[in-house]
Image 1 (cartoon, rainbow, N blue to C red):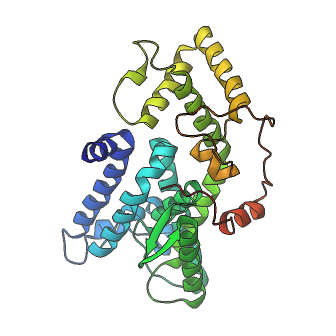
Image 2 (image 1 turned 30 degrees about the vertical axis):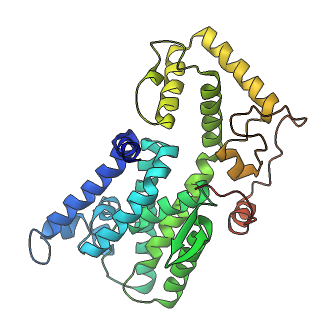
Image 3 (image 1 turned 90 degrees about the horizontal axis):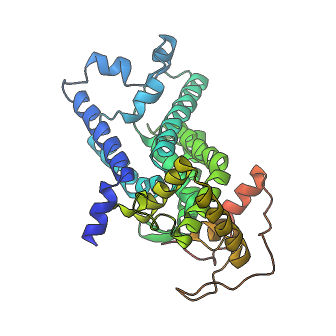
Length: 322
């Protein structure tokens, strides 16, 4: 167990999360280098209408790694470490950083818009918008994952919905000093980014599964899959290796694997397929599924409203990803 955890954090995905945590920590120390914060930090690491009017648009992003309070930093980094690693393993480091930065940008924009409507000159800092984008992405990827919120067990999608409703109430009621508008901006970006990359993720994960089934990375000593790291990292390396070599024999093998996978189980009995299509896996562990009559699963309606309905009101009796 300990070795697996260490390998997980030593992977590219783990190093990405740790780098973000370290960066947030260093910026926090920079804030504490002077009582009240150095003027440089106020100019370049705090988001406000004044900074935007002064042309410091980079504060839309830099404010997302900026914390003045230790508890604020600790809470955001705790959530990032607990949920970010699983999300990063699915998206990959590049897409995860896009998710983090995009959540920061839209959360800052929503915060400034809300301040403009309220004629407020308040300053916003913190990674809450980016973390909210990560949490929404986690809920979309693992909707049946079990979480405990204040001692109450609920699914990831239920916890996400509860948090979003809390932020909506905060925006309408104008409660406290929490930037609820920034949270909602991060949540919106997390959902929209998932919709944007959903099809690409499905294709990549199906190809990973077929590569694992046919052992494409283990049939040669030159393949990258012979190295260490998690299974997901090794399968990613196999895909990159096949694309780089573009060997006709390997391509024909992959095509045969694709056809065989469609005949056997439509290619959707992986955990990702079950999350989206609800296809149960009836075969015993280690047993090859029997061919099905239906060649491909029938997609559900893909409109934004239909996706939201499926996300928030899906059947709670479905399998849970733990």
